[in-house]
Amino acid sequence: MHLVRKPWFRVTVVLTAVACSSLLLAFSSTWHSLRLASVTALQSVTLLYAVISALSIALYSNYVKGLRETYLKQVSNVRDLLEKFFDEHASSDDPDIQEIIGDFIYPLLQLAQDEWLTFDEVSAARGNIDEAALRLRERKPWILWRHLLRIEDELNELGLIFIKRLVTQVNVDLIRGTFMLIVVAMTAIALAHVLPDISAVNALVVAFCSALIAWAAIQTILLLSFYEQEALHEVGPLDKEAAEDEQTDA
Image 1 (cartoon, rainbow, N blue to C red):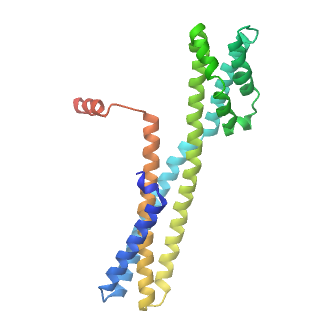
Image 2 (spheres, rainbow, N blue to C red):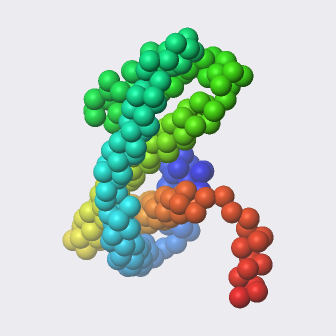
Image 3 (cartoon, rainbow, N blue to C red):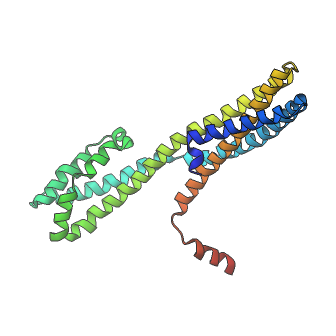
């Protein structure tokens, strides 16, 4: 699945398909028949690919819907924990606590919504408390596990949602390419029926149909890899052998 996401691999597959179709033409004397067969194959693949794309859009819509709201809700949870820490420890004389408030808590509380959405300022602030947190762990460990670890867990969850937003944008481009492929395939099918029946055109049609069929196969695998990735993310790490044993027992 990872290999098919490499641009060079996708280009190689398409070029290989074109090369194979060219070899087939070189050893065949019925170019017109190959042209008709290629167009028929492209029609079938395009129809199947359109159905797959429609289903993918439905699944994708369910996945994307509410993603921003989920992120902002998680931001609200983090801010609540930050405010709780600030309210309880703002008057503390401990220099490490004051360092954490000054370098971590207060900068995050000052962030506007747009700054939370980019996550850059959040990442920068998280690196400012390592030394102070280590010193507090030796002297006042309850502050670490009662407040800071909870804040860190919520920030980690926020980071996962942020990554999901980035992945969503990448897959928006994938779905855009999916429908562009359908448009190109429909155009190619229409042109294949009206272009003149000469050797050069027949060879061009066969090669182009082969390239589109190969590209459709690659795009389908990419869509599958996207949903597989999201399923694994939602399920989390599981013991595969234990799951198979449970299924066998059932």
